[in-house]
Image 1 (cartoon, rainbow, N blue to C red):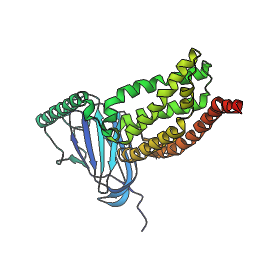
Image 2 (image 1 turned 180 degrees about the vertical axis):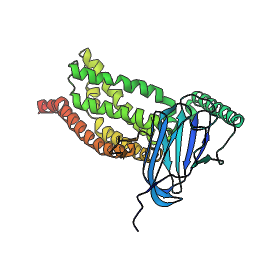
Image 3 (image 1 turned 90 degrees about the vertical axis):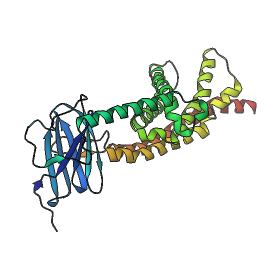
Length: 328
């Protein structure tokens, strides 16, 4: 059966809170959704099964007040849910600029609250967030587990990984002899995982894999930086030198494997929410999902591992191999 080319309007239900708007689009089996916000106008277009059968459905909504251009959406088997953040936390008297409600738009009574109830819900949510923050800040070491790693040391990891950009600068201007490309790949890769993947997906922050990622990153630096500091004052500790040029052999592959697991676990969250996804401008109008970029980055991750391992192996032969030849 050939699909119709006619464009139709789906049924849309809406509700609001002080900080955000909820839209529920009554379409099943949605394919290739194109959802953008430009100048406080939401543009929607998607192939799906609605009230008029399998067709292309589209609509536009000019919001009553300013909203943030970033949005999140989740496709389910029966519908598509959109979440839009208001620029200012307040209560709207209606959804659209036009006073007359569009025929396809109706309240979502499953999520509908009046202003007073919404205020109570907001206060309860803020109180819950405050209690959770106090609970996290007051954690003692005996309560620590793999699942608490991010909330316990995230701020310190943010600080240390930002400082790591100095390594790239030192390599670029020639202060140290480290090659630029391996340093650049390592620092940029770690900051991508930390700030983009872990920092933006709350569900990932309680995963056990975060512990292994942070552990592999940190244990290497415990020996690398003391080695560099002693080298600055012309002191060589042979045991430290051997550890510095040997410990990477198990830790770098393990660290890359942990990062890969982290990316694999994060892909479904980015795919469902559409976070960081974007649509190319007309006439292409192609939605590029961030989850697809993560899959490409997953391949590049192991390419970067190969480049770093080859560089580290050359360093090890240079610093340890020459001594063995002298002993013969």
